[in-house]
Each structure stands twice: as structure tokens, then as C-alpha cells.
Length: 124
Image (tube, rainbow, N blue to C red; front, side, top):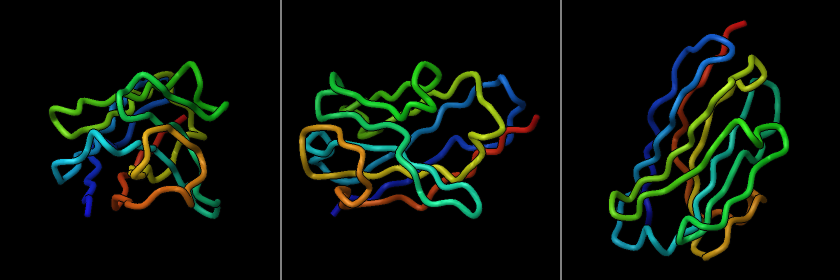
């Protein structure tokens, strides 16, 4: 079992930055690929970014590439999402997820555990 708790969401103006954190329980965090997803009101949950076991392999949705950076600290059981140049269309609840596999993948169905989410609101 892995429990995930997101933090770092909030209200920010367009062009601003936020860093989301996701703290994981358990001693096998380093054996889980981690992902960030988001869901805006009235829309389906969508992939944002993911990172493999070692932190070397990452991937990003086209809409955030170049603006968001995913990273992880296995010693702290934490994955981060640095979000820069935020836009109003980035407004959503952001979820952290874990999958018991080494490589980062996009499909939400591949993930085994989910956090409760943290709200990010970007004002224009």
C-alpha cells in the first residue's frame, strides 16, 4: 500500500509559479514510477507528467512541456511538480499517482494509487 498526500496548490496570477509536492508513505517509494494528473471542472482527468524510478526518465503533456518540471527525491519519498509561466487554462485539481513499475507512462489506468488532489487556480 502507498498513501499519497499532495500539497502546494493555491491561487496565483497568470505568469506566476507554484511547486506541488506529493509525499508518499511506505519504504518502497523508489520502486514506483510517479505521475501528475489534473482535472478541470467539467473535463476529464488528463495526464500532466510522469517520472521513472531513478528520476532520469520523464515525460510531459504537450500543453505543459517547457513550463513544468517533474522531479523526485527518493530519500524523502517525495515527488515534485514545478510549474512556471502558469496560464488560466492550468486551473485544475492536481493529483499525484503511483504505479509499481520502473518507467514513466501516461495512461491513468496504469496507476495503482492516487492522492486526494490539490487545487491550483490561475487568475488572468
